[in-house]
Amino acid sequence: MYESLLNLDPIRINFSESGSFVLNFVLAFIMFGVALGIKTSQFRQLAKSPTPVFIGLSLQFIVLPLATFILVVILNKYITPTVAMGMILVAACPGGNISNFMSHFSKGNTELSVTLTAISTGLAVFMTPLNFKVWGGFYVNFISKRAGSMLQPLEIEFAQMFETVFIILGIPVILGILCSKYLPKISEKLQRPLQYLSILFFIALVVVMFSNNWELFLKHIKYIFVIVFIHNLIALLTGYSVASLFKQSDKNKRTLTIETGIQNSGLGLVLLFNPKIFPSELLIGGMLFITAWWGIWHIVSGLAISTYWSKKEPAPKAA
Image (cartoon, rainbow, N blue to C red; front, side):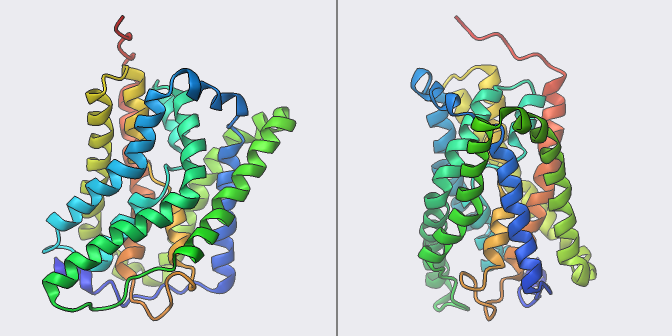
């Protein structure tokens, strides 16, 4: 398995400068659509009931990156450094843009989901670069001690990643919130269609990116599938377990599970295709495959668990 995954690293996905621009634009468009559902009044709910929000943010930015680091250390004999760094990058990204829809579909706490999306997306401008640098640095040190030397540099430029995340996430979200506030009727009409379009756009982009390497993708997908399946399952179980530990309501458990298991891997792809963050001489095929497949798989797993919960009414909150 290790040798097969190692073959992924030299793979260079033919993606032109115009293609990278399209990827950036699509993600910014997706985040604008997410922000249309965010209302400033929802932030006031934080003061009334802050506990589930703090739990959700802790899961997103502390627990999941830590759990991922532990997982890549446990699997270090079976996965390559770039696959591990891809997993860490995914865990460092904020919650996925379709989590609000899935939370609503699963009869969870939609208001909590939207609030977490708004706050985590804002915090991601700082927390995504920080988490990748911190946990990626820990992993690089771990591998270096075991191997005796680094096979390739995996350091990233924090300031450049911060700038990219701010442009791709921060600006579209601010514009979306302003649109929601001052053009509420238009925002309401656009919100749902943009959610569906965002899923289709992302899948289409992944297919286009890997079209020139389709045989290699199919050849190695069985290994990538297993790794992403385990990682995503741990994320979902972690969200549900921590929510249960803190005695959250059934609706909150559903939302916190989904928010932890649905990651914005589209942001991860944008970062990977930025040559100022990941120079072209780096062999990061493993990171690309992990990040891209996560973006497809979390839709499948999220819809599966949402469909299951949609058929069961949440248990009433204990008095």
